[in-house]
Structure formats: structure tokens, C-alpha cells
Image 1 (cartoon, rainbow, N blue to C red):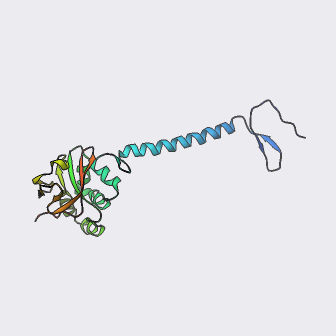
Image 2 (image 1 turned 135 degrees about the horizontal axis):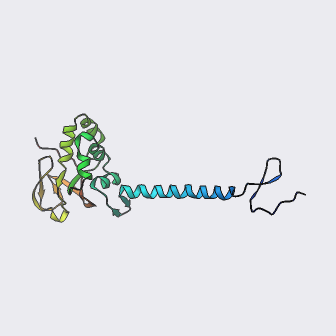
Length: 194
């Protein structure tokens, strides 16, 4: 029968030949610490990436980042976000910046991928279309009476007084909060004048 030394607190391992061997002191502890460090690093990375984005949507609870971040996290506005990301338009900068803005955001059903693809080659036209949906200032639904606002593209946005219609287009959801503005959801695309 083999005898084991009790001089070290090292764990014992069984070699392929069936003999018990003593692992070098601290090896098992080192492996556990490395595994723990890797796990903590992974958890820390996951937490920091959601904090850096600044947007978390869980059910009906919304913690808002910039207007751009909220649109991007929502999932219903991927074509709008992709169009805003076209560098030449400058729209993403407006929606991410500290400037207070209100956007009447068309969903992907209204602003289709085919429409976006047809405008990608025309950054000026794309910028005009997207800026037709944005006004300067934070305008909550309670402030949407009858009257007119001017979009960043220079076009008139006319409200019917009920707060539910803009240029004869339905506003289907209102007051999605963002740190630099507010988002109202449209079921159609606003077409620039001219």
C-alpha cells in the first residue's frame, strides 16, 4: 500500500498509471482563483456594457439614454437607426447630442428596409427625410395641441388639436423618455415638403 506524505497541504491527483501524485503546492488554489477572476471579469464586462449604453428596456420599465440609444434599444426602429447612422446625414449626432429634441419616429413597418436602401445612396435626401421627423426641444404629448411646429428640415408639422394626429398621420404611442428629449411613435412616414 502506498503511503502519502502529510507535510504539504497540496491536493492529490491520480496519474494515468493509477498512482497518486501530489500536485505542486498552490496549483489547485491558483486554478480556482483564475477561474473566479475570469468569471468576475465576464460579469463585470456584461454589467459595464449595459451601463455604457445607458438604455435598459425590461417589460414596461424604461431607463432612458439619449434619443438615439432609446430608439436603438427599442427594436421597432432599426431602419431609422441605420439611416441615422449614415455619417453624411449627421442625424445620429443630433439624436445623441445634448441638444433637446423631439422625434416623431416611424416604425420599421412605416420606414421599410426597401425605402432605406433606396435612400442610402442619397445622404442629403436621407438627412432631409429623417430631419423631417425631428423638432428642437422636448415636447411632451400634453403640449401637442393644435398648431404647427417646424422640423429640423424646415418643414411644417401640423397637429389637429387632439394630440393624436400629425400631418394626418396617427401618433400611435407618445412620451417615450430619453435624457435629451422625447419620442412619439408614428405608423407612417412623414414626407418632406417640396
